[in-house]
Amino acid sequence: MTVVVQRSFVIRRGSFKEFEQLSREGIWPYMEARGCKIVGFFTNLHGGASNEVILNTAYASMAHWEATRDDAPLPADADDAARALHGAYLEALLARRALTEVSSTRVFR
Image 1 (cartoon, rainbow, N blue to C red):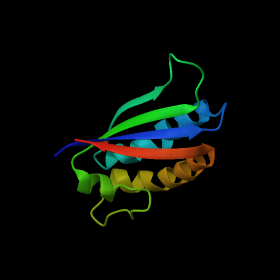
Image 2: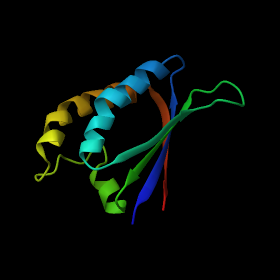
Image 3: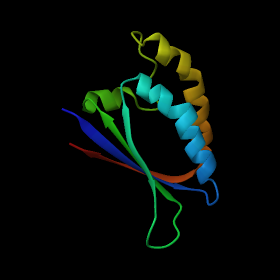
Image 4: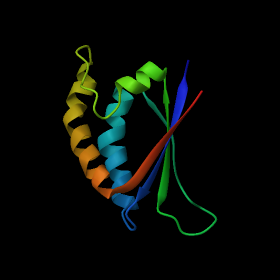
C-alpha cells in the first residue's frame, strides 16, 4: 500500500535557498534512486511570514519508508545509481540538519 509522508521542517530564517538546494541536489536524487517519489515541497504563501517548509514524499509501503530512513544503511542489493549518490546524500543530509530547528513527520495512506 502506497503511503505519503509529510515532513515539516522549521528552518533557520534566511536559509530556505540553501535548504532547498541541499534537498534538490543532494538528498532527492538518492531518495528517487531508492524508489521514492517527491510529491511536493511547500512554503507558506498566505498567512504571514514563516520559516516552515513542508515536504511530501510517496513510498511504496511503510516498509519502504522505514528502509530509507536516515540511519538505514545502504542495502546490499542497491543499484549502481543509489550507490553513486549515497555519499552526496549523507553530506547533504548533515548540512540540511544543521539548518533545521525542528522537524516532525506524519504518514498518510
